[in-house]
Image (cartoon, rainbow, N blue to C red; front, side, top):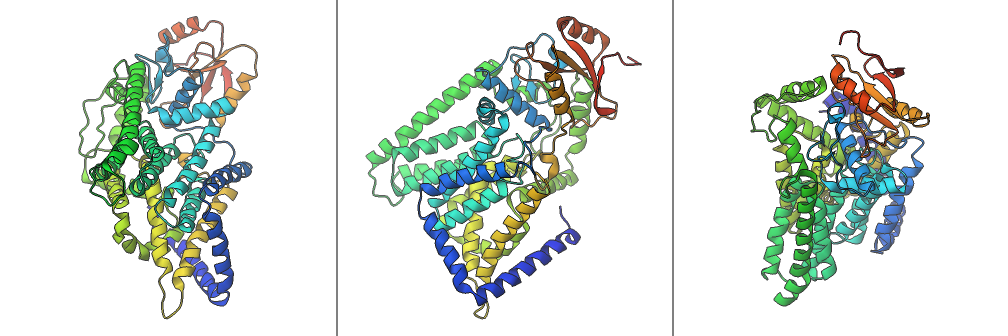
Length: 556
């Protein structure tokens, strides 16, 4: 957590900007009113706004490429998602297991009954689209822009148009520039867009049932089920309850029961049945069992730790390489040992990571409006969603901000609603609330601009700061004659979060392959299988830029 000495300079900046805006608004109120009226007229065009925001997010991020280049993957999860995207781009859901799989074994990847990523397929589909367009990151760029446009569309159903525009702009600035959602391959935008689709479609259905909105509601549920299934399930529980209440005729609506069944229930059930059929088929292709998720299969194979705070670890498993031993029997078990101290520590990590992703220091100015926002009758359903998913996320040991991605639209809905209440606040006829509303927005724009200008991909830099050394070596060999096999040899004190052994969907035909330097017997089998390749050695812990002809270790 950021402590008071670090927060003080930020607090001084907030105070200074707040005082300056208060002075300017008091002296020239007409200029601020004209600016707001101009934005309100633009926001009043419901179709143009989301499309223009979509294109603006893309244009701004492309413009920032000199400061924030195309991201280099560095986290285990990113490589697994990239494998999935590469598999989809080759027209397959999964790949056959490889006979030399022991040498290629790596984190978050299943090898039996198929060689495939362990994660749900939605993010992989986005990366596959990007790869087909030229680079997987293009898919990230498009999905992030689509998320911002979808949040705009959602907020239009819950707020007046100008406030919907404000919320969408806040989301675009916060999550579309200096955020690991935009600057890595982990995902986040896909599930966020799905949550926004659900909330926006639901509000429209309650006002006037329409087949289109029912289909969009089903599409949002389908995407959530295939991106963040656990958090998505929690998110959809209040939605299901509200929808059943509506279908039962317990809400004020001019629609007849027949219209509700025809225009809402029937199209929604069709989408959900198709979604369940796809998920069963996907699981069947990857795990051999329509009810067995790839992630669950991987947990049974490799993981002996629990998932929830109250779970106790199982007996340690045995692994075929030292890196898995260090990660699963070392780091994972040391990270959480079922003590109250561990509970508070991992909860503190969640607060820090979520606050970094969704909030900024200027958002402190909207705190006075939060109690009023939470008390708004219209906000009851989003509030239940917020509370339920938050409890579910905090109940899990592991965390990152994109775990709560379905809540993104809900969070910005409450931020804007709080700003609306703050804006009405005055003190001795001084419109400090108007100044605060401007300061909240300006501070976010200023902070994000500074981060981009300094090349900071996210306030928590490790989430998107991959080491380019591996990519440089792969790029060098990709332009060399023949095919290449790189043996990766780690030191005993290797950082288990810095993994180099990852490959794409096509192992036998790949120009460059990465493999673990294991025992002499396994290496001999590997070399005999790939006898047509030039064999190299990389030692990331000694010199992560040096590429040497392979030689056995001095002490095998």
